[in-house]
Image 1 (spheres, rainbow, N blue to C red):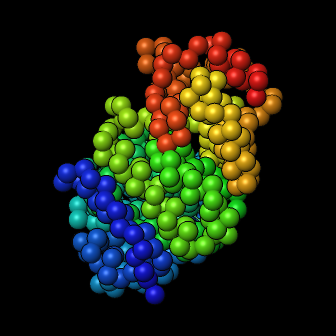
Image 2 (cartoon, protein in one colour):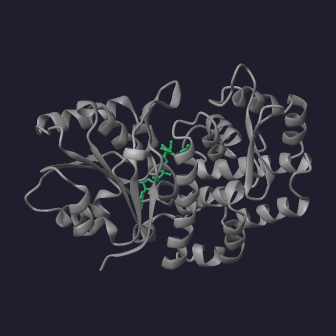
Image 3 (cartoon, helix red, strand yellow):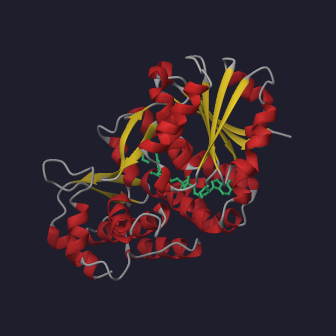
Amino acid sequence: MSVIMHTLHVELGERSYPLYIGRDLFADRELLRRHVSGSQVVIVSNDTVAPLYMDRLREALDDRKTVTEIILPDGEQHKSLETLSSIFDRVMTDNHNRTTTFIALGGGVVGDMTGFAAACYQRGVNFIQIPTTLLAQVDSSVGGKTAVNHPLGKNMIGAFFQPQAVLIDTQTLQTLPPREFAAGMAEVIKYGLIGDASFYRWLLEDMPRLLAREEAALAEAIECSCANKAKVVAADEREGGVRAILNFGHTVGHAIETAQGYGSWLHGEAVAAGMMMAMRLSAARGQVSPDEVMQLETLLRQVNLPVAPPKEMSAEQFLELMGRDKKVVDGRLRLILLRAIGAAEVVDDVSSEELVTLIEGR
Ligand code: NAD
Ligand code: GLY
């Protein structure tokens, strides 16, 4: 039986939308009826997630609707213009019109691609996110960033396009591989560090319940994470300012992902190492204490996440890769640091010497 445990809203005027968090929501007939308006539906998933959840979603949709199922190959390497084009081929062949609804059933890769397809098809159609990884539930399904990769850069072709609703089903996390679960937890911890000290204290205490995937604890952690993200997105939808704090740990993280080759380190793993570096830099500037640095390290180890970048990466390699970050403005590197636990800031005065000392002292 489906149960909605929490409902939140991303407040963006006429583009505001609800986030429902609970159990069995992807097969909740009433929720689907409320948010799938037209007579046509496109469900996009992949060949890992579809065998687990597609049939139940399809059965829960009104049987008078025409449904096109699109099952993509699994993997970041398929988040491409070619795959996007294959989505349009199917949707065109099946004659979907402007009132169709696109549903993303999967992790961030499926969500980002389906969202971009929905943004482009007939200049924008209805779109619903059903995220099935922890990372997608607390991050990528919320906030309207959609994209595909270009061979020369990740997420370089995309659009801001908000969904009509996000259905977050904690039950889908029960089938998630442990490494993917841990990677998503890095983003959960991030929300505590950048904006919510009491949530962070709760994570320090209740992490064992989360790692045991207790339903109520998961729903609570997802609710706090999404509430924090929704607040930031509502204040700065297109990342002109404060939304950049969501990238805490990501500048170093992206450098690691690029250096190691995508897929070798998961995004959340690289972000965990990046958060440790940002935390150490914040401590070197006297903004957080050495005890707080240790506390984060212990928490990340408990989740089985890395606490430092790969040893073989040199300081020069870091500086070169970090210089290519999207947040570089007029040649100045902008980093996210903590002023205190629960309070992030964007700084642009970190010198190369400071970075080299930090990287070499890791
Ligand atoms: P993913 O979508 O590749 O999913 C990870 C793996 O888990 C895949 O193999 C997937 O098939 C599998 N999976 C998904 N749900 C499952 C389930 N319930 N049970 C078993 N297996 C399941 O990766 P991700 O970490 O969810 O997302 C990463 C992507 O998200 C990247 O492309 C990244 O750029 C993007 N992203 C976007 C935003 C945004 O704001 N739009 C934010 C962060 C990340
Ligand atoms: N994942 C960062 C953002 O949504 O802005």
